[in-house]
Length: 280
Image 1 (cartoon, helix red, strand yellow):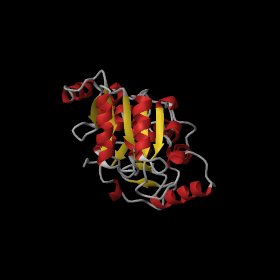
Image 2 (tube, one colour; image 1 turned 90 degrees about the vertical axis):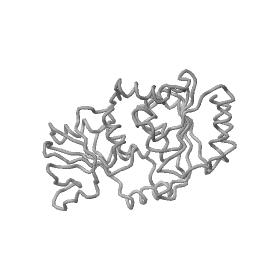
Image 3 (tube, helix red, strand yellow; image 1 turned 60 degrees about the vertical axis):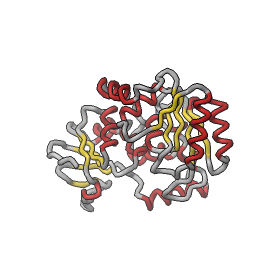
Image 4 (cartoon, one colour; image 1 turned 120 degrees about the horizontal axis):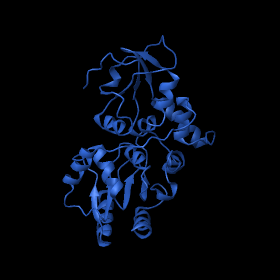
């Protein structure tokens, strides 16, 4: 854990998943202007978050700490808190509020996309595009770690997710078998790769196949064919996962590159055949 230094005038606490945190990259410039901050910082719960933010905002200081230990102050409005400076809690949806929101989707009283609601809760006019940058040392490390991979013809797989339930291992094994039959190498996302290394390698791939997760949202901006599989949400019961969380409606994406599959409505054989036949 990092020691948070008293050298900022406004901090943004990330009490959210990777997907919500990712959207902060497109709102933080407007937020710093609104709060007249000259020395902002970002406080996040995991090192992978810092890796992501450093790709978009390398000049903003980042701290990794247990954000749950930062106490809320009821004396400040808008969930701001005082902790060696003014801190803004960027998570607009505690779980109880998220469940209420999703219930509104189920009853048809809420029609806006999840990312649009986050934008409105943040109070910004638009998601301002920021070009992610990958350092040369990250590129070098990624290439060295995957020296045996055919960089000209490979598929990037993400079979794990914290947001949704996993698919059976047999599905991924059969999918990899079919991919290799087509002459492609397969790179499975792994803890041996940093987030930035995985992002760079995914950008080189001929396609990305992933469970719906926060990392897949980050990859959504890549101009690479993507096949995103939606399974049951781990946290709340949602019938229309694709309708609420479709990556086609996230900011700065090429929707034509994104193909989405609802595993609660399609069987796994249909999903596998669609991916193999329409993409490889």
